[in-house]
Amino acid sequence: MTAFSVWAPRAGEVAVEVGGAHHPMGPDGDRGWYGAEVPGAGPGDEYRFVIDGDALPDPRSPWQPAGVGGPSRLVDHGAFAWGDQGWAGFDLAGAVLYELHVGTFSPEGTFEGVARRLDHLVDLGVDAVELLPVNQFPGRWGWGYDGVGLFAPHQPYGGPDGLKALVDACHRRGLGVVLDVVYNHLGPAGNHLARFGPYFTARYHTPWGDAVNLDGPGSDEVRSFFYDNALMWLRDYHVDALRLDAVHGFVDTSATHLLEQLAQAVDSLAAHLGRPLHLIAESDLNDPRVVRTRAAGGLGMRAQWSDDFHHALHAVLTGERSGYYGDFGSVADVATALRQGFVYAGRYSAYRGRTHGRADPSLRGDQLLGYLQDHDQVGNRARGERISALASLDRVKVGAALVLTSPFVPMLFAGEEWAASTPFPYFCDHDDPGLAEAVRAGRRAEFAGFGWDPEAIPDPQAPATFESARLDWDEPARPPHADVLAWYRRLLALRRQQPGLRAGPLGEVATRHDDQARWLVVERGPVAVAANLGWAPARLDVRGRLLAASQAGVAAEPGGPLTLPPDSVAVVDRTGAG
Image (cartoon, rainbow, N blue to C red; front, side, top):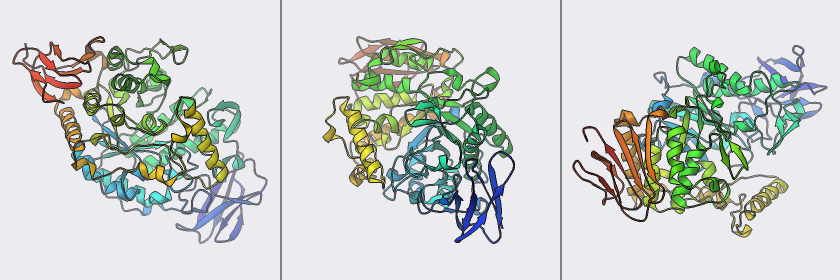
């Protein structure tokens, strides 16, 4: 016997359909819940909820084997044979994350395909895998940010057991797992939540339409929908951390913000499980309250992404100044990011036309993720070019060194470590021709506004666009990719070997720079990182033992200064340099 329940305060008549048979559901309490017990129903059985005569998937469906519009299927989470009993979690402050998209990471495009390449990640030296959204979304492939089955792992990737097997394999190899989840909106295709209850509200408008209802009538159950989802991934799938997409998209005037409520629930689960669990936010507000502790009046996120550091570094390396890159471009901006986390911390932003951000001297480096690339910054370009298509490999090596020796928690984007030639454009697979054309036209109109030829923008619906993003695993063994891979491995090894290179207090970071000559020196305890992005060699007062150099022409004189060719970087141990 299985007990079915659903929140449907807007429904007049509710039933559950199991095996073709309808079972009426009665009210359960006074908040709009309905329930029924169905004899003989169990794991593997398919079902739908019938709302006023319409059969719909379960909003909390644990499995959608036939896609977002198909029947839901029951899952017994206790039946999977886990082998990670010795896993104790991972320390975010000492970690390097590796972001990947399951569908393009391997030829198979599945959870199993990722698992088969975990040895590469272990040899590389990263500590945790960050998966782009894997909940059920429309079609065979996509980024996953238009998901609607938030409780169901994407069937083409391998479904519930496939994800569990991947997490288990990661843990047995010493790798943590971070999962990207999207709670600020749901996709347009297959989204029936409004038929069940007030999940959305027209009181607030967002880039995705009506806002998720977090503070209006019925919002208690809407909020429970999201934090129950978060706890499910952490508990039933053994995931170690969640990356919360675009939390600035939440409109929540409640006395207890959804993020604070979620942080409290996750902390309680971590205490129960006896291992650390982390919440990492994506926010473009530059507001330190996101990561400030709840006791200090913050929202209690463990960390957040740092787009300012990315933008400052990208603008210096590539020379781009369009869009938000117009707010950046100086070596001084990179230095500021490394010292205080946010470049815009109460500073006027020409791009926004207003003062942006807030300074906080208590902000720590381990509360920020730093990266040279991520899925957004690559994929939201018209053609999805990686930085290795926009800057020389010498400059890419400089950028990698500044990220992997930074005071932040570094994150790599899959393929970055060998300067993958494959792009990562936006792609989707909508069955509805009208929706497919709307997405296609919207992308072209968006980038036409930036001066791109609309006809040159890859069709997001074309299978070739998706296939173009699939990593080529023959590249890491070939020049010049092998040389870049060796550099990344060397930097990751140094971060493990040098305690001073762990993510840590920003107040302990010292910088020197010259914007005209375009050089930067970053000092972190006994280690100095010197970069020259100028057009002439730079002779810098950095003394000590050379630990790593991106070019053969880097010269460290005994007891003397450091000479850097153009577009080069060196890591120096200053211990005993005098």
